[in-house]
Amino acid sequence: QVQLQESGPGLVKVSETLSLTCAVSGYSISSGYYWGWIRQPPGKGLEWIGVQSLYYSGNTYYNPSLKSRVTISIDRSQDQVSLKLNSVTAADTAVYYCARRDIAKRFDLWGQGTLVTVSS
Amino acid sequence: QTVVTQEPSFSVSPGGTVTLTCGLTSGSVSTSYYPSWYQQTPGQAPRTLMYSTNTRSSGVPDRFSGSILGNKAALTITGAQADDESDYYCVLYMRGGISVFGGGTKLTVL
Image (cartoon, rainbow over all chains, first blue to last red):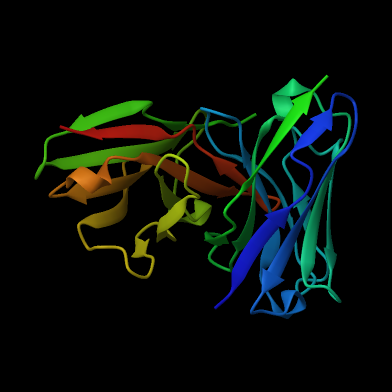
């Protein structure tokens, strides 16, 4: 059974870098799929952040509105996908979900999510 | 920038039928956008309901169906039940590998 588990600091200061890791278990991350991140501010809707795939030649796609601040990378040796979002503001406070996107473009597998609060 | 639109809220009676839609501020939704739908209850991660317009994910009851209606993607719930009361999100796949979420529809069953 494939599972995703997010981890990282729950509190980040304004202007600093948010860093999260998603551990993939039950599947070799380099064997297929796109892996990435989705977030949800408290009480608001879902926002796609981006995805990357080692299987598909390292292709990486980002939300244009976040592209200048975000980096997604995959560690094949650890079967982990990471997220870095720099220069954070209070607007980046959200539950961050790790998710898998399949060939049908659906997000077929989700982590439980982790809340990150940006505070001064 | 193209925005994906959904009704902010909808209400349906138990046993009734409701159709939620997913559109674009510019242009029409087609199967080429690979519409997918997700159900989310408070405090939980989203659950995948439908993908590639009209394919149900494993374990999703057949009272959920997907389609293209006019210029929008649609999710229809036939015979709504109390536990269908949730937030529903659509996602469209755009050129350049980008996925875009709609703003979500809060469905009330009463």
